[in-house]
Image (cartoon, rainbow, N blue to C red):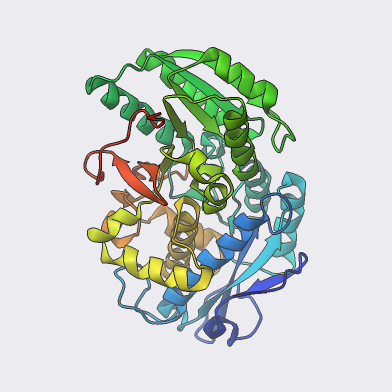
Length: 421
């Protein structure tokens, strides 16, 4: 499926969705035909593929919302929003180009000109920080689909909601895994942190530093680098010299590719690479580096292995794969669920008024079985965070991810060390 990108006004949706025409609604009405939600993503620049993939995830969600389905998911059988007269959901896309200030400007355009009922986004946490502040000022809900910075839910915002885990929750699972490996007899004493210099990398490293100290691991190296750096040679030389048992990178896709290629060039082979997802959840990284990533482990929100227990996982993945040619991953699964949860809240609010949607989001209490995620449930705390978003760890084996932790979700033991040679 191909499409053209107009950065000022990206209007993309399923054919069934677009058939209902334009015109956002701000209040409930029996005549409501359409509810418009804004989606802010990098559609150009270094992370443009993330925006393309997010579009496919949202198109998949629109099909489940606007058309009838037998999946055991919110709104899946309704064919629209029944409490709004069967209104269909349409997405208006905007390109923030990975720039927080462009994100702020585009959020305000979506709110004031496109009259969106809510905004979902944004991949980069640094962009979410500015976009959510604009949404707060206008009283429009912001649903963080795939931002993992813990600080985002600690600013006292009323209109910020995140169903997925943040990096402190993810990092705790990573150290739980290391503790479990030690109990099996593996010698793990030191870790090396490697993180880009935006809010994502900084918050991730801070969480890992704190956990390493609490769990008794020595941080042999703590290396911050400039995001989208043209070279990581000096940094990898430092990592090699530190020779930690586990390398823990927090990097987006292009940086992750450069890291792995530079490690190979300099002959650096840690026992394990345990990543904070981001670039390490993306197929494009593995396409670019091939066997260099074999055995690497990433934390995740999602596991295709869950399809054995939750049939909806397979149904959604099949639909997404028809549109994108890919399986769902850590990012696209969260994006799919974010739009579904947001649409469900708008339906329960019986309105497109921001305060009414916010109240419906606060009242959300959805069993994990009604999602495609390994979460126990979706229920937001006073900060807008869902504390029940249980993470998993995935290891790259062959050409796919295999769930290796926690025990109740794992289908295989982790390969340790990752480099057998």
